[in-house]
Structure formats: C-alpha cells, structure tokens
Picture 1 (cartoon, rainbow, N blue to C red):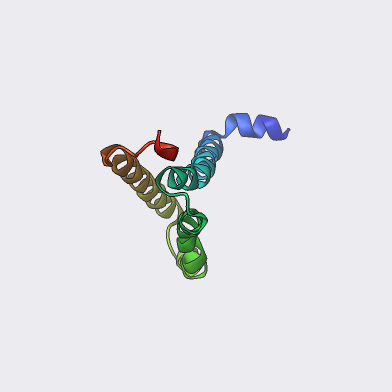
Picture 2 (picture 1 turned 120 degrees about the vertical axis):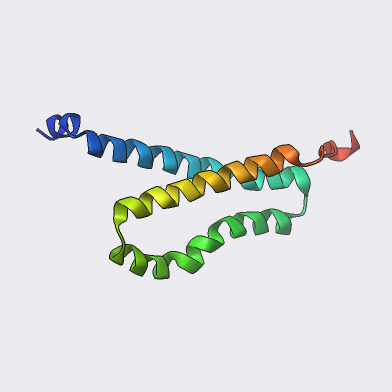
Length: 108
C-alpha cells in the first residue's frame, strides 16, 4: 500500500531524492573540508577549526531560523536554501581550484 502511494506521488519522490542528494553532499563536505585542511596544515588545531567552522552556522542559527521557517513559505524557503548551498559549494570549489599549488608533504 505505501509503496503504491510513493510510486504515484511524483512530488514526494522529488522531495526525497532532493533531500537524499543534499544529505549526501553535506556528508561529503563534512569529510572533505577537514581532509583538505590536512593538505594545507599539519596542526591539529587548524584542522579542528575547519571542522568547527563548518558546523558553526548551524549552531548559531538553528533556533532563529526555526522561527522564520514556521512563518515562511516552506517550498520557496527550501528552494532558496538549496540554491544558496549550491552557490557556496561552487564557491569553495572555485577557491580550491584557484589556489596556488600546495607543497608536497614531508618535503618531497
């Protein structure tokens, strides 16, 4: 019964597939950004600071944005939030590709 409803409901399938792609991207970024920091610095504090900075907006904005979410059009809000995430992700990629070459580790 439930599978039949999911097969017939295109909007739900689009929502779930979009959420799955966004969560996969978040997981990859959570792994890739500190890993990239290890290429730049071997200092554990710097690497931890990168991981901390990636989660800081969530920590600071979760409660206030929850209030806004309750009062706004959720579909438009989801679209704008995902669009902002895409722009920021491409910005990170552009910064990485535009950065000067990193020195090889251990003086190789």
